[in-house]
Image 1 (tube, rainbow, N blue to C red):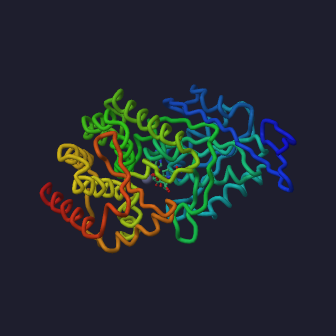
Image 2 (cartoon, rainbow, N blue to C red):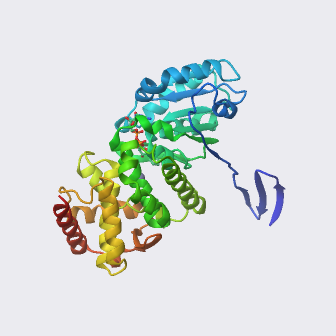
Length: 390
Ligand SMILES: NC(=O)c1ccc[n+]([C@@H]2O[C@H](COP(=O)([O-])OP(=O)(O)OC[C@H]3O[C@@H](n4cnc5c(N)ncnc54)[C@H](O)[C@@H]3O)[C@@H](O)[C@H]2O)c1
Ligand SMILES: [Zn+2]
């Protein structure tokens, strides 16, 4: 083998009649916390955009709540004139390539160059569409993410994945591409409807149960106040809960940034949930389905003698205490078991069901560990428990 070229971007070698170009792309992402991001005297956003023109993208709800402030910021605080604001009318049902089309069309019209960022300010839907758009436009322009929902703050806004739905399948088309910066301002949550606060809390519990017992205790201790105040109070505990969730997710992602390993602890709560979401016609939201999935996975772990009664109870009580569901009456155990076929497809043929063995300690369960009847009895137990609660 002979090295023909070896520079920073790629190494070229020759081996007989095979030329091989190997590359590993470096990326770096700044994740910065702030408050009152859009106040004219907060320089963070202007500093991150720096001397570039930017395309800002928001959805109608965020525009109604924060659009006037954002326009003022764009007009008065940015270094360069010529940045534009696009209000993109999308929802989960319309998180598709049409949204990407609208963003890149506007980027083309305004003559955005390769160095200029596309800035998404919104929930996961907006962040995802803009993330895909930025990755595709001119083969990739900088992307800045400003999450305004709890799911955005602790998940969609800090990760490297971007995806849109395609052919009726959720998140089928997408990219792994790190944003240049994620700017986190939890004050945006003060206007977020409560069901989205709970949806985000389900993802925080996911992190807490599999990797951060301290986060679990913070969420439990303040569950009422966190819900009422939308994570604005008690201030220190709320900030710590969000920070720990972000750190935990980044830690897990950093171990497996491109998902080469299909054994992902972040899949906790995400094995049965796709079935529950779609079977309910999406009346059970993603966060609610994640909660039910975590409850079922915990129950399975208990039935197999992996997790003890005390931890099982703590987990189920904590979810219920955050007004998150543990069961849904529409589940058909046989159908849910069959739905695991497409989950295995996504995980190289293996089930890799994540379940807790203790707080902060996940295990992976495989096909030989579970069957239809086990799932059925776990669902029945949870339904019983729900009746006991109500
Ligand atoms: N790329 C990733 O890594 C990743 C991770 C998790 C989730 N996601 C995706 O994120 C999406 C879910 O995101 P979501 O839960 O943020 O939902 P969402 O983006 O649909 O936002 C929820 C609702 O809240 C509104 N909203 C946003 N900010 C608000 C605010 N501050 N005040 C009031 N209303 C506000 C939105 O307009 C929307 O109606 C899904 O499509 C999911 O696939 C992606
Ligand atoms: Zn999720």
